[in-house]
Amino acid sequence: MPAKDASLGILTGVLSDPVNAMSAFITLGILSLAQPFQFFTLPVNPWTFLVCFILDDLRFYCHHRVAHRCRWVWAMHVVHHSSQEYNLAVALRQGWTKHFTGTMLFKVPLVLIGFDPIMVTFCGVLNASYQFMLHTETVNKLPRWVEAIFNTPSHHRVHHASNPRYLDANYAGTLIIWDRLFGTFVAEDEADRPVYGLVKNLNTFNLFKVLSHEYIGIAKDVSQKGLTLFQRFCYVFAPPGWSHDGSRLSSTDIKRAAGIGAPSVDPVAAKTSPP
Image 1 (cartoon, rainbow, N blue to C red):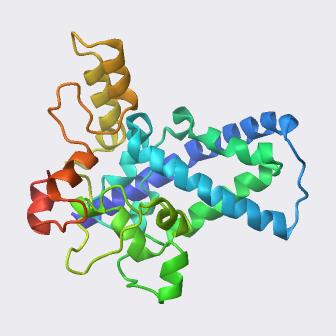
Image 2: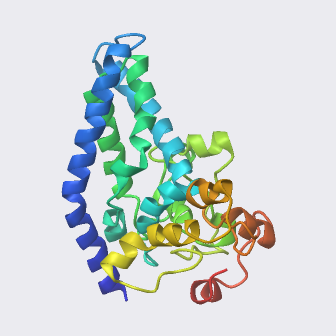
């Protein structure tokens, strides 16, 4: 139901504002603590801002990739991917536990290099603002040079798709060049239209369940009897879908079963009967 889904996205976004403000405050505090340990002190000017933005975009790529490959961070990020729609309301659909994941530490190296903490924080805000506009199906592919350099609605549709060929692809924030460089780029294929959502959809609009389901799953998995300490660790920090007995499928397993790069057999069936 698109209306209910949009309402949930907007509600999640509005209610997350205080959490985001707290997260920004905590992040700025951590970056300020790192500032006395800078290797250099770079001036604040248009050139250093441009370099800072590019490096912060690389920081986002790394952070985003970890968010899909580490269950602890995925438990927060899965909220954003749980919608089976793709529109601007989905951009607002965010988890509330960012400041618990520790991902703000990805910004510390930028401060240690010599960038001002406020500038680093502002670059992150600009990056997030750019990404908001990507959540749309009304924009088709843009000119080739734009698609080659920048993240676009087409590239980000791939990222939100649950089709096997599109899993773990296009982590970019503003610049798609990072995906091209690190081998995670996949182009949108009209023959394999993106099917949005998770490989196992929630089928609920309950706000509490959407926000907390993965954390509840982690707690249940970790509390199983007879597990080793390492197995409990993996249930928290290994890729989503990891299991000690091989009873579940990770995104890597799903892609391997379908053949890497192979189109999904039936997008409609994939939406109603996920892998």
